Image (tube, rainbow, N blue to C red; front, top):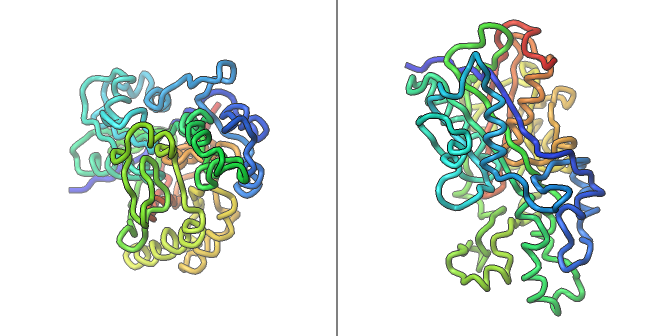
Length: 390
């Protein structure tokens, strides 16, 4: 028997003070000692005004790990009335874990220090936050767990520091003389990604006072059968196929900046809306009751304001033309935090005092890794006035 599941608490953690566009390159460093020629172009397109990094502004060194910022977000879910020691299931996700092994989630549990419970890691890129949430939802819905926490987190800044690219720059100095920066597919993402963590607490009953978000459904689809890899790390594209990092020795990995995150921007621009909006919604709307006028808030995760109008067109083409006046996003103020983005959006909206019982939310999270997409439908339940921040 499937029981209702409710998001009863939402928390986010963003390290240090916001970093402005003018401060970014000083914080991340200059590859080969030269300013990026792509930075201003990318920032003008993505519309992000500030973001957060775990890099200490004084020392220039990372001051927090991914597991630590995940734990900080999760701690914000608990207090004397709901205690961390009572947690049954912890699901944590990240595209940028601190290590390849062991799994990210067990490292988060180690930081939290909570008693033994079920602990699960989900992997991927932006979508892994939603797969974590779906696992947690199913665990409570099935009765396997009384409660569960889902968390998404990213520490992209440590991957974007100039020191990670200097070996490639120095080994290709002659080739790069006419283009004195690293390849655009890598440099582009240095100005797109940022750090942060968010988490939700799921329970089988709504909050006794205040509001909750009932999870009505979560649908996730992958189009990897039709599309090649578009965003990747720890691999090199060879003859149209990804060749993993273990096929290269340490010197070659550094020379190629193999561990850097890369993205085929043209492939992204040409296909992200078609597959993650239009093709996905075509399949979802065939089995779900979805109408634009019934959605009070649309929470879209997108990497850049460049895609906002394209997304609006894609929704209209799919028969779901939700007016932009009902969209809620904090991309420009919180940055693109990948798998954490949907949690950070939910945190701001849920704790804003703007929601009231009966409203319906539709959340959208795409991933360009190999073109996957998730939509989640939530209904606000409970009584107003008790969940807004003081």
